[in-house]
Length: 496
Picture (spheres, rainbow, N blue to C red):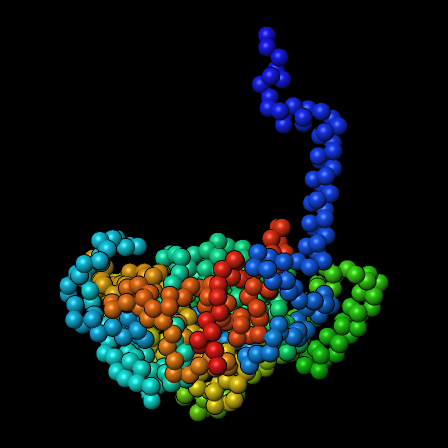
């Protein structure tokens, strides 16, 4: 029988030596330890920039923190429209859709997300020039159309998925998978909040319920749980905050003050216990919210002129409830809440244009239904923020997860998902007014000029909040994680 060692390589034979094995293992462990120490001393990522992890006081995780650099925007309002708004029927005017209406030009795919394709279809609503800029906007959204001189459009956004759950995850967290922090969580992790009596991050869900990806759209992922969005709306206040009958507001406040003193004394007995500090902070905020939330939710105290402007007294019940949510959003911004995410549409179990903007059939009816709910209240909210001077420090983001196709589906009445180009807009602090960045092709089928990824978009939003997307990180499972993963460039052209 041959010697087994003859089948082992030279390097393998060396490892059979106890002395060589222990020597190499010791050197390797020393090198790993040195790498870890260097990383802790000055953590870097592949881009060559030192990371910035905010110094967070566990006794007060929401205390305001300085941005990485000066910025005009101090707060952000995200108006998110689940289901994919059709850009070619709203803000992205394409004359060639009229020219080729009813035809199927070369280059149109035979099959898209939901099956065979139909012919090119002109917009279902008339486009008209608006404002001083003459921006062509659809009659579907007449109220928003009046304000286009204040908007900064992204017309060549692209995404990596054409499925709604993954699309929502990707847009709101930077990853198609679940378990990653949302944009709002990253911002509050970095900046904290100016208001100590309300959550730093509030998610106002649609009257119809949660969007397809649910709480992942405003979750904290692997960031501390303190930075997840607190979800409630004008109809449904946060749970368990109601004051027991027979307890006055003054008695309630006195109870909260007493508990705060007792908690502070208890914490002194266990210095350095961050879990205890976080729990105390959470309960103390809940106590403060018992007083502050009912006040901020009293939208009935708003003058009649505001209710008329937002439309809480006209239209469908869904439109009225969404209008109340818009008033709530403005009141939260006024109170200094750092991030407010307002949802226009739900979709926990599908809906096909009924619960959100996902119009695979009868787009003329379903998009019109969603626009009737969204247009007037959203336009009023943006105008109200501007009128009150809140534009000076508030960034407003109007967005959806992807677009829709310029041609119809085989059913002849709906448009399929389009991940290759779609439109979102910004307005408020730090962005150019009456400006359009990027272009889709002649049909609105693919991004043609300055294609912009979701990573680029989120990098730009963080920049507008005074945050460097390459340096804002959280160390998780051996990786310096960030909202934009390892991608993204700030779109400098849209900045003031």
